Image 1 (cartoon, rainbow, N blue to C red):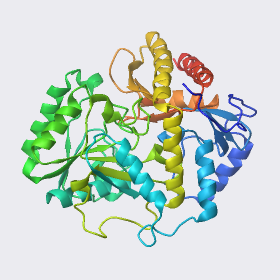
Image 2: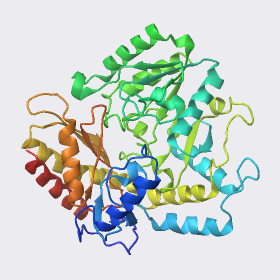
Image 3: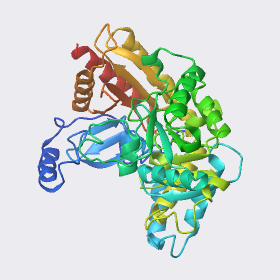
Image 4: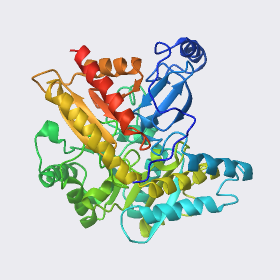
Length: 447
């Protein structure tokens, strides 16, 4: 495959020139604490000054290996050359007019690209927004307009955002929901297929359990939409057993319920397919995208069946910044990069490297309960050795130790006991091996 293009001014090597965090980062953190609301937390106490390929450079000059991609955003790299060039060119032309006032071609071109790329060959329409949560909310609005129903079903461990409606749809209380209620009504929760914990590898059986709950507690006649992450993100990188998604989508189709795939974290080559739904041939009525869509600029979208998308009245969808011209230029360049550099295949190569390294660690450490994931969206679930009891403290300790050694690692999961790995697809194999050498040593010293 073609080697991914990267910002050549960022050396692709881990390099520590100070402790992490260094003095410049500590000084900036003091300013942050004095100026930024306390509710805005940070994972690493370092401040970035440059990033490219698989490296983030901090203000002290430390070069950190990036296994987080800004939470799956910089899929094509944090300064992908095509994205940088497209944004520079668009900024010189105009930065904003508001598509709802004086529209521009970039918005239309992004919609055309998403209509082409997303699952299914039916006629589609797209609307652009700013964040994943905003797009999820609009998918619900569209589904309600199309069906004339109100209820929405989501799943255990789900994460859909931090707005009032999406907090109701999100499962995890702390830190996302605690103290922020009351939440939007008519949101119901169904059991997810979670093979590691429920022991069930038959996704159809698991789907029938979920459907039974939906029919008894909600009723298909009241249900506007079922919203699901094909592989859960913040919930713990949980991949339902094979057959779960197709069975659920089939039930929705038979009952006039809009099936919404939240591919905010899984979309745009992240899982080794352009979209995670592609793996089982699932065609959602609506698909929600964001994160990796625009190389780091804020953009999100709802794409779906033309008859469903067109159900909202004129003026019912939109927003001042939705489909901002800079973000649209970045999205077109990011999509071009994914296709030209065959980053779907690169995600599968990353999967092979990382899964091999993780399984080698698992073979000698009983605290790793499960290794899972696809493409460049991989995770380990940590437990107390010899049990399936979650061990969030171990996850926190391993991540913190990795950070000190210059490797950016994120945690997730309802219990906070999952280490997740989301490297940019522009990362080299050499950096991956260096990062997992560090992680292997970290597991040893945390015994």
